[in-house]
Structure formats: C-alpha cells, structure tokens
Length: 60
Image (cartoon, rainbow, N blue to C red; front, side, top):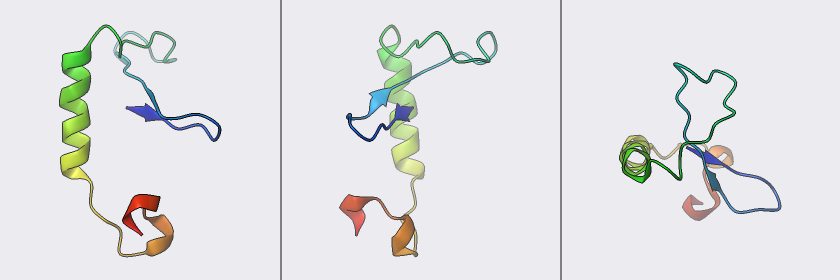
C-alpha cells in the first residue's frame, strides 16, 4: 500500500495484479475507498515485533 523512499514521505500505491503484474498503473488516486479499506486492514493486522530492531521508529 505504501512505498517508502529515503528522501520522500510514503507514496500510496494500489495495483490490480490480475491485469497489471508489472505494477505500472497506480490506481490509488482513482480508488480512495478501496485504498482506505486496505489501509485499515493493514493497520488492524499489524503486530508489534518483540525484536526492537524490526520495530517502526514510532514504536521504539
């Protein structure tokens, strides 16, 4: 859902892999409802790692 680049903030990405295996057509901007559903799912499924090395900066 997100692409994180070192010098930029996260970029939202959404692809229909049934027709776009090379992920060239980013559908995120045109499908905000689907993106929101997937973002919520990812957030709900996230489990804090017991190993601090693998935690997000805001979780340390």
